[in-house]
Length: 417
Image 1 (cartoon, rainbow, N blue to C red):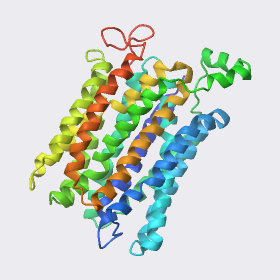
Image 2 (image 1 turned 120 degrees about the vertical axis):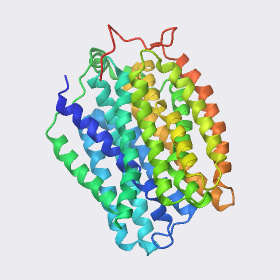
Image 3 (image 1 turned 135 degrees about the horizontal axis):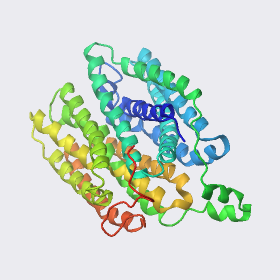
Image 4 (image 1 turned 180 degrees about the horizontal axis):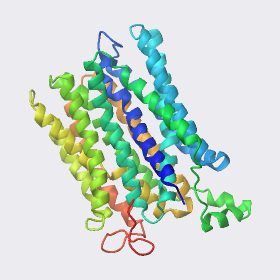
């Protein structure tokens, strides 16, 4: 049974990981400013390629590493990688006007951030599922809500530190928080209890083990959903500020507010949908939100110039559309494919990162080729519609969903997280 200290630490780690993850997108006005790093759109997109590669690799290797070294060590390694990323970003500030040095440092920093994300987030989802075995959906939503809260705080901190003339205060703050987390986590057990089914699986002959590790065909439905979701989320998370400042002529403060609104509503949505799960089943949430996201993309594409309030509201609506989709994909996968539940969090996160990479890198060359961001946002609405169609394939494969669409707990009532 997990202690309150373990649960609090896991939740705090999700919050700090969220801040770390959005540090680079939140600093996009600094990274592209002519008097700072002066990155082009293509360079800004390339910046996230190492992050995607290391995040995908770490997510896929995480299950194997956890099997050899334990979930706690994998989680600690992820925190350490995040810390190195922040230190490299701080170091790059000293040479930001020299791209021959600064850009490689930034690439190495995002590579470390990807590794940290790929190791930490699946570990946190696995630990949370073990801590709350009777409320996996709700616990996943709450954990990812805290992750989302961190992503909402990052642009707020950037705006504050930029206003103080000290933007590097954000990575410095994240580094300090990561040090505190590492110290606190080292003294806690942070163990995943072995279920009777897992114990029996470990006792089976190795000849059968090779068959157990075979990836079941239904996994690719979840993987495809994660790729499309990653693309949609990243269109908002990485390109919102540049759309508002460069295309619509709004201030950096308004752009930071819009990004904060996006991540804040992502967070709030996860909390709300976890709270109303009994009355508004997870399956219905899963079907409705992609179409909300599609509507938000169309609104963003049609935004007029000099309309700051409407811009903030449009990205807030996009946040609602994104809110519960990723955590529900993970929890549905863990329940549906129970034989490989240990790899589901890492697998889904890995394919989510592929979608992240497509949007983070692919949009840069398109912009440099003359394609406007509103046109790309309009096309993204079609991706969201496909996501909505695929949501029905995901939930059809989940035997834990009753005919009413309500998640059926194993026994009794669903426990609160």
